[in-house]
Image (tube, rainbow over all chains, first blue to last red; front, top):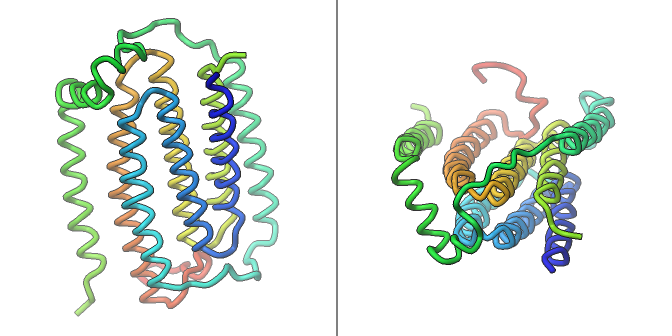
Length: 168
Length: 101
């Protein structure tokens, strides 16, 4: 029942992710990245996390991607140069990537997942609402990390202003 | 055949590896940055998958925090790339090989 949308979104996400890495023009890479973000938002809906799906589309596909496209337009870097500093780097990267997939697949195949189950069944989340469930946890159990995150955002704002300022 | 947590974790592993290969392979810092975002998203997917499997909401809260950190990271990183381009007139990481440039 859920398998068809899962395989559709997974195939879309993997193809678009390969596009991000393979395409030479950064604008096309950014557009592929948008497809990856939206397909992951769809997967979050399948995982009964609609709040995160909305946040994913708003923050990643909205804010972060706009920032990327803005910088690409600002710099207009063109395509990658064909000349390579290190000739063996590309094949080695692919070999390492395949090895990483194999290693992770092996670990996942051998892993024994814990049987402990919490109280948040999909039915309960649907009943109280995904946003309420995340919000209640965020403002009780995770209050300190939440506040530290706001501090991090402040530091990021100050850092970006310092970096973007013209040197005297 | 049922949709299990392993489906999501394997998809997450594939996306993470594609992102890692992108960081190793590309010389354009913008695309390397996009690959890092890809890796963050893959980890987010694993978090939400395990959150569903363990029937706990904690994984979703982590994803929310990672989302915020990613936004801050992109803002600072792109500012660094713009500053690099301003001083060196290029966006190739092989050219950016001196400190205090």
